[in-house]
Length: 297
Image (tube, rainbow, N blue to C red; front, side):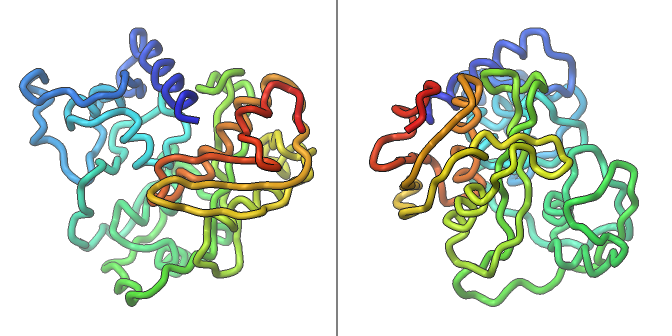
């Protein structure tokens, strides 16, 4: 899994050589000392949340903030295509703490790439509060660029301390032939799924992924390379940032392009949660990477 992510970063770095402004790129892991950064890239520009400026890329932001591209990607799971960021987009900077809550403007015009989750974070509120303020939004997963939504004047009070409970998880599917970073030019796209309230969201996310048995997800055109498998969850654990997913059953894939797709699916499945830094998958006790290559198990 780690090798795949490193190859992804190297690929983004190569694209950077010919990238236009505001198109994200990346560079090999390793922070750049502040003394080596140009004056216009002073680390003082960085904070817990960074607002993308015209001409920025993931590469220049990482240099400015003295962090790595991988750290930026891990802290901003909403970036489905690392080569596409836009001016005005707000990125989480690893190691920072969220700014104090502040009242937001009365309305907000949705931009390309926005979700209710990213808008809620940007204005220090919650998706539930946004839905309450916009009763005409029947489906929280369907907003569109140019749509005007109302924002709560003040954020809702924080949830009382206690074990976190999740009622939604995200499932990674594949947008094929999109000139994306995967081996066959594909891109991972996260789809929200409702689940019963749980304190084990990664387990719920794995179960939701394995429950999809259609080749294409609804009318979205998103492809699920695991649609023809017969797998069940044996156990899911997270220990010191390592997520271990153990499955049983039969893995059946459609060809060599499905190999990087499935690897990326499980990687994104775990990394949607901040407590996960690395994901390893076993099927009938065998590491997933040993089963890829079109052979199945």
